[in-house]
Structure formats: structure tokens, C-alpha cells
Image 1 (cartoon, helix red, strand yellow):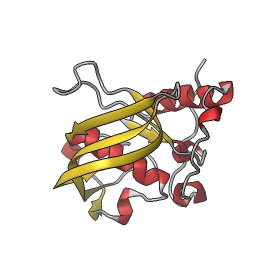
Image 2 (cartoon, protein in one colour):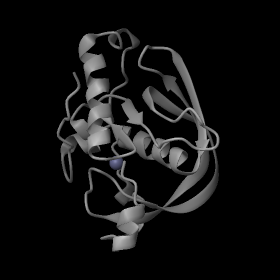
Image 3 (cartoon, helix red, strand yellow):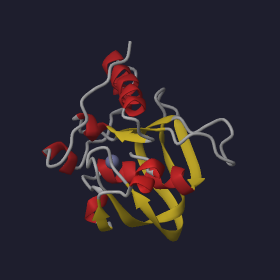
Image 4 (cartoon, rainbow, N blue to C red):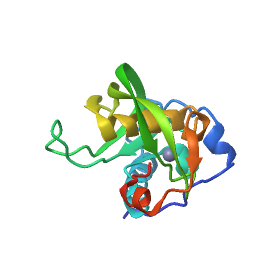
Length: 172
Ligand code: ZN
């Protein structure tokens, strides 16, 4: 059974802390597996395309992501990623971005268009993810959360979205 957990917003200190590395021995712990299940449940309920552990008040280097299928990922992009590291990044682009922890706003932010991220999956196996566009954007956004960084620290023109922008906006 998975449960929707409350999403931390605004000035909660956990959102500003550098999250702790997960000990690989901890991954098989049922409580850790429950956390992963609950994070997926919370992300889908929000709804969002990514969610980092600090957003549910757990200061650990873990996030979940699902930006759906794309050309490079016909099997989808649903992953839990533990102790992630950006291995490479290229081509800066300016994008709109919103965050479940900063509800009701969007901003314009410069992100890398393509990134490669390594880490561990929820079974403790090595994982390598590569992608572009929304998938790459969400990977960078979630890793920022693990470093206590919110998109509003980097974005320009932070605003309440116009109705059309609101429809198009994916939160993470
Ligand atoms: Zn966020």
C-alpha cells in the first residue's frame, strides 16, 4: 500500500538542506521501499513529473521521475534514482519551470537541453539515464532539490502563470 505524503512548500528548512547520501545497505529496508512507493503515489496525485525526497520532508538523495514516453524512451521514463550524479550536460536552453514546493508560480530558467545522470535504482543496481527536453529538465530540477536549491533561485520573471501557461505547465 502506498500513501500520499504532504508536500513541503515555501520556507520549510528541509527544502534548503543538502540532502544526505543514501547508504546502499539501506535500500532493501522495507521503510525505504515504502518511501519510494509513497513518493511515486505523491508525485502522481499532485500531479507532477518529478518529486525529490526533501519535498516529502526526507533529507536523502533520492528522487522519483516520470515525464512519460518520448522518442528516446518508448518504454517510458518512470524511475526512482538514488545518489544521482550529473555525468554530462550540453546545450543551454531557456524554459518555463514550475515546482510543487512553490505552488502557483512559474519562471523562466536556463537548463541544459541534454543530460546524462548516473545513480542507483530502487534495487541498488547501477542506473544510467540520458535524455533531453522535459526529461532532462526534470532530472536537473530534482538534483537541485537534493542540494537545497529551488528553481526560484535561478529563474527570471517569476510570475503567476497565464491560463494557457497553466495548462501547459508540468510541475516537479
Ligand atoms: Zn520542485
